[in-house]
Length: 155
Image (cartoon, rainbow, N blue to C red; front, top):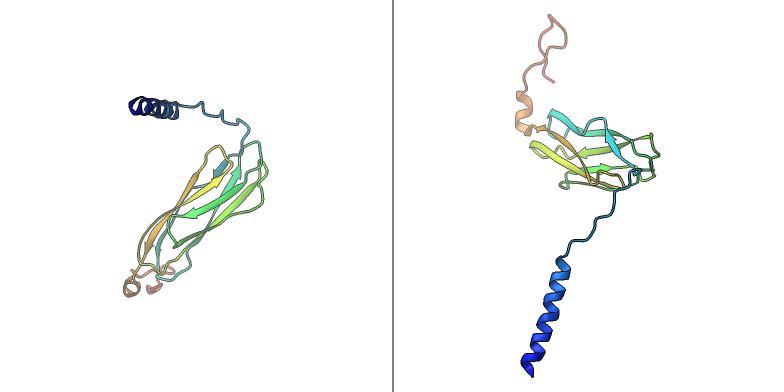
């Protein structure tokens, strides 16, 4: 009797596993959905002094047919902090996402911000890059001439 009961339970489990693996039909994408289109999705700060301001505003437009709602934006680490518009962006209208990097950290910058929204392309990623000099290297910058014929000055 135990064998029969175990066989029945095993059969139900197998049916449950097989049905759980059956693919479901994906929802059809909304052709009128919002779409976030950036003027540029990578910003290079170049070489920064340690502690120098490192902020950039990524400009975007809603190129879709419905209002764009950004629900979240997250930096790839705690040193990269995005600020985004909380109100819906109407079709054809523009907005900005401000990204601030903590430049008190020395070395290469290669960070991303992941944007979650109701857009067709979701999530969307934007990137910042550059290099922050160590405090001891800041005085070794190459001299920069401010105007021809004038002595070189360090910046």
